[in-house]
Length: 186
Image 1 (cartoon, one colour):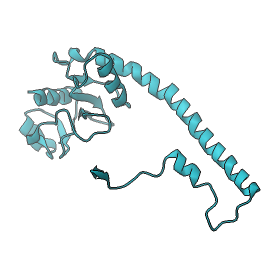
Image 2 (cartoon, helix red, strand yellow; image 1 turned 90 degrees about the vertical axis):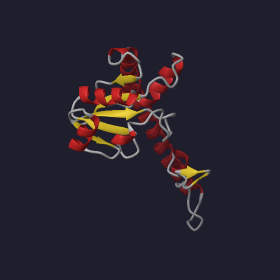
Image 3 (cartoon, one colour; image 1 turned 180 degrees about the vertical axis):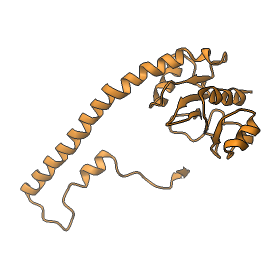
């Protein structure tokens, strides 16, 4: 996105969308038009607010419990505690960063294992939630490899892929993805 100054700016946030409701410079503007546009803005922001409440109550907070359980049982999968296994795919990242901080274990987790639509993923942890920099990449000799080529190179059955940047990979089974993560720790 940037080196120094951002290469682009995101202008689709709520404030920008509300601002777009104001009449353009070359449109008619009077108190009734402004009031009608204000009511549209109230409707837009109200709907956004209600959606956020629904999301945090029905999605965000329940995920916290599941991530906490996985965090607490991370040594069940590897004695180092650096690999965490989730039983389902969910928005886990922010919760994990918070849990690491709360437990004075910032940077402790290196890899997350979780199911995807049909396979299992190994996800290298970023330095921060918004960072492309990783705490520890997936092994460099695996980058960009797929299927049998990756399985042969890794010595692990069922490998599917490793992204060329080393942030994510896949295996047909949870055990295979876990083996990939363990080898990445070596």
